[in-house]
Image (cartoon, rainbow, N blue to C red):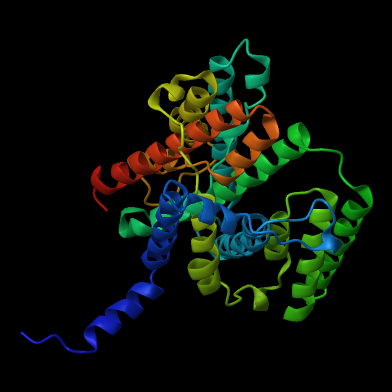
Length: 382
């Protein structure tokens, strides 16, 4: 049997244009980063990830390494694309009513409260360890969403949108927690400048200004002012996504984010070294609190709050979404990586506690990813 010479290129093109292709790229890049961080080339990998790269105009708060530029800079584009997708669903899709929008918000709140309580109970009596209560409250949208894209038809479109919205709400709430409980005093002039730029973008949209360059310049200014103000700069991507007028709401960024930003993000952020780690460390209060907060607290909080909201009539469950599917997606909400690592670095000054928190984050996120994928892949029919 002769295989047509055009068959393989066609299949490759189709795969590269599919959501599963981008998800595979992210996962493979993440595995490569983790492998290099725990290999004889770990020093070289670390030197690349922390390659010095700074701009004096951004001040002391600005990104100073390659990994910081990717996490705080390029990831703003990821949140921009997510907000644009959610806007589309709100205007004419699966989030087109207040009851449908309320569900991911309520789920995000439940997914923050329960993990924090579990961590607080397990670290009770240890004042320094207790400062890490917010570590397991975050869901990493960059790793969660590609997994559900890999599952294809096994996840209903409305359920996928619900998880996207929940992840965004979760990140916004997590950033608020960082600002209130772990942040330093903001730079008020820069914060005021960011507010003025945001107000200008809102006015431009209200006046139906359709100029991509104007919004692009405003987005860069807003991002830089957020950095100078000490505010999480990826919020600029959220703000721009909310302000873009309808004719510009479909920018050609999806391919750049899918095949460039996300794989690079995964490659650099998954490089957690397990040197010196052993299974006994998972039983330490900090590691155990973080791991159980992600693996148990997240699905219990998200699923419980969502089902309760549906039962009492506060919100509507996604269309064509069974409780079985909803629970599987709630398991995936336990993937807390970037924001969790960031909170751990802010909560602790003791390297031992930071290491214990990182071990709990990595173990909990891995278990959450595997359990959620297995539950949705083999636990029911599409």
